[in-house]
Image (cartoon, rainbow, N blue to C red; front, side, top):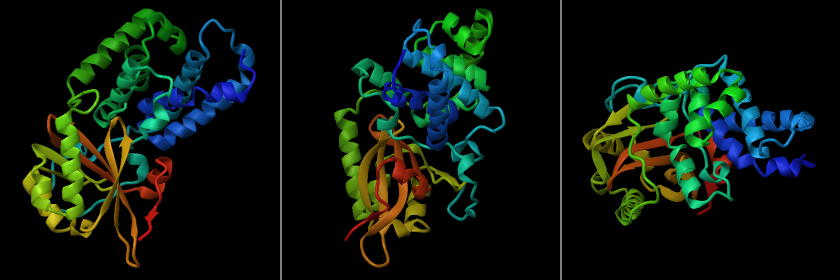
Length: 316
């Protein structure tokens, strides 16, 4: 039996990753993990050692997430809200709780994970995959994650969800069919040399605000979205018009690299009125080959930047 909170805390990253995949929100995942740790500490006498401590925590976390999902709608991405817009469309804003959120890789991938496990875990937090998960009923979502990501057997899942093995297998069949019908984007491990070069060119073009060079890096069907706004754009031409028009306030920005949702990401800082730069957005890029296929700028910097350990202001 674990003897201290420290032994529970050793598994925080793994449990946070599971909660993030279930809930689609870094903020909600943190809340769920806190509740998981409280329930675990209060129920230590029920831990009999037949499974690992991490497995026991996953079971508790799964039920915490199912409770949380019972009275809330799924989180979305702007590209799922409706058709692509134009640069002249109004900016309609939805609350933070409406949108899928990115998560810092460092918070959800355990430091003791081996290379193969690390690759699987990073792929399972990609925005496209987590967005697709939100279209599954909560118990289907749990069954799929416990088997496909964590490697549990149908019997282990059935015990955790207090159901039967046939019910689990049926849920898995339906969940896999739903995901197969959705675009999960390109799944890859580490970046290729061409993709690393692409990111270097992206940063250089952005900081010079060379819009022609920047949009030349985009896939022909690339999307640009900016939660909390519903507006999203498709194609280099529309994105170019945005950057040269309503988005021109990004001129003079600085980008600071980070890692979010298993993808390359950058903290964007726009020039501040009195010198220096101030937080503007967290850019998450999804790649297809050697082109950018999706560019999402999450503008809720007050919520996200502290979670990524990013300052809200860069000095002059």
